[in-house]
Length: 561
Image (cartoon, rainbow, N blue to C red; front, side, top):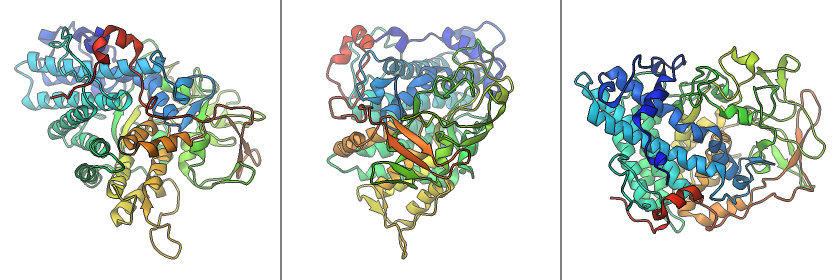
């Protein structure tokens, strides 16, 4: 494993902090004004906050750039790329895959920077640093480290747990740690963060106790499967997931936005639904790593962005079939329309109109065009916020100011519902159904009813999964839902993944403009439609570059203390 993966010296951190001059986030706004070294930087609470600000953005950059959707959506099957990134789309990712390596490096970079923050705060904090500021800063670093390890263990399985990069730099005995012991470690870390983080954010976008409790709900729901198996989950951890989810829902003061589309209409940063976001800023076209580069890869055309390299990316047939209203026909097509407002906010169908995005070519509101003959793409809308005309000069190519969600309150509602279902397959619990409906009806859909003459029946696990796939499409979530399922029911995870259609299709509106329904037809000549997921290819391979430099990664994993 490369040393830079584990060690990034403080001067790199401080230079990155200084590069944030001129950004919009309050806690990223004022960089240090003089040369800084370890021994004289952590002298007051303001400097301490400036040091940890990097943990909210630049250390996550390589994950956010392309790996977020490559793993979370392409590998999870909610979106695909027809001509690029095919390793993740087709489930044959290799040790040389670019986004595989970028993700590994990004997550270990988060770990390394978090470790160094903890090390330097404990070693160099001056007399004017208050105990509370020190406690909160260390809790921020422990939160980030735990979250990075959640990504690492879910993508690669056993990974080495590193808590002190300085002391362990030359330790050649470091090996991977078992999956269950990594989960014990990150749960313990997040519990500690929840104890020490404040209930109210000190500055816009900063972590709170509720951010950590939301992650604990997520962690415990997954860990229930890690500690389970053979088709069951550990009830103790299901109960913990339920407890933390409800505590956040009832006591955090957070609330769902009334309109789903408002979540992704800029400026949406740090809204009432957000529990944790990566904090991106536009601080000039040359400040690489502090702005959001992802929209460039998703936008289908330079007509609505600066570069617009996402012309071959879009929703999969499988995901479109999840939306209520698109019914399968006898000839194999899908046909209809949906009331689900999430589709319009996530993917562009021919004829969809977006008043907030200007089509540069005709200087009018974007109407997604109807193109192609036997294939086209339902291009990505989510995180695509517009062209130079729409952003008033606060963006440039690969430098966008919009944040990336890492956790929203909607997830806690669905975690609660899934935790109540637990090992039973379905539930009629009124609170679980109420929480499910909070997400479901916000999308513009009719209330899910358990009883009554026209009742839908008990709320099932499959219904919750489908809701998650639609709610969080293009937020890098689907893949981790499958990993979580795989922990306790691998066959169901394989069956769901192998049933997905990830191939080209043609979306035809009944009229243009103002279509009222669409017909979706599979492209006959495109053969790479489905994958074969199994135990041999389910997890990502450790990048070859890391294996060549750290042979111990090939050894059998051991428990972490």
